[in-house]
Image (cartoon, rainbow, N blue to C red; front, side, top):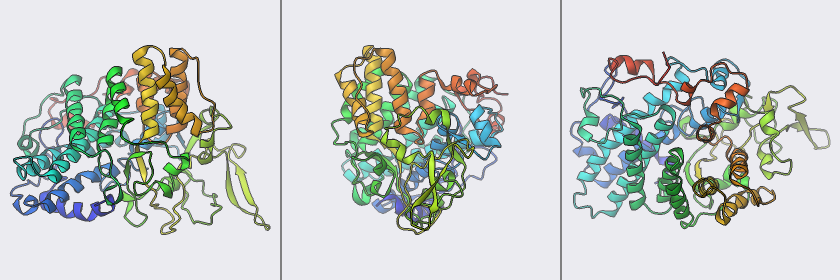
Length: 507
């Protein structure tokens, strides 16, 4: 069953078990939210059908659940958007709070940066309770399908927890089902970093031990062994545990993934169904599935006067841009510029020739970050069925190259091979004869060129010590060290009576 079916089953499951009302903020539920206890779940999880409903409900977080702006979608709260708008990848033509994102002008009352904390802690608590219910159906551990569901849930819990940890720092990950479901559980102080990292690592490793290497067909979009290992590799890199990151990257190389022949096939209709050899995890989208399961990146990015040469009608709000000084870092021969436009089509002349507008000459703040192709189904001008990649093999190769360079103090043949595979597809010359620092600089640029708009630039720049520098160089007066983490919502601190402490230097 793929993600296109999740909305309907997940909705029923959520109604039956109150699955998204358990909100754990380092303790029990917030006291001002209605709590719908699980109670007797026998009617829900006494069969594999009930179990899969709970698992499918957990997947809704990948696309932001009922919040179409979040998760790995394209809106205000989504990881790909927040990573883009707080780094050198992006600027938004709409101004307002988008300018605050770019300048890192964050406060505990700025919903755009606090929202995901209160959005995703419920998923973690819900998954913990669901794990206990599914494991109760399989006490001897002999049912392979139920074991797989356990692996998927642990992988999802790790992924949701990892993103919260990357953005907000250490927080309590509830792993006891009774505690997670208890609205009166006492608040507890935030744990140290090592405890959080150990739990995320444990979940990823246990998921990888259970799950198949990949999913295809009707199962495409589910959390696989490769997805668990990719998340684990990102955790190790975040912690600068380079040798472990190398080992995981080398393991991922054995799972049968390769680069797609064409870069843009990762972001057009050819990315669907699991046939693409590069995509490790994706949010499966539908143009008619509602905003939570639709890709509307093009609506956020295309200028209002954009007209696709194919004739496909497209909604275009003209917000997202890539700053010109970032765009200008690309080699003009880079094939990836096909989806990043300095000049864009605005119609055709009387002879059918495409007319182009020069965005730079017109005074636009940046290039058009098209990234995703239009949906040839034409079912909806705003909502596309092109899938959202979350993890790709190109990312793994670049992570491996960086990790080897850091672990060994210089690139070796494997590191060069990894980065040069990515560069070769882009039509660029291979790298050779670099020392540690020059190779790292090449990695920093290559990750920008390859992965822009995919949600990883913020963590990359923080890992390299360049996140605050970017903001300062762009004129921000808010780029102090506190901004390496986003603030917790003020309500969380207040409801805990101060037991949960705010991130440093936020008032």
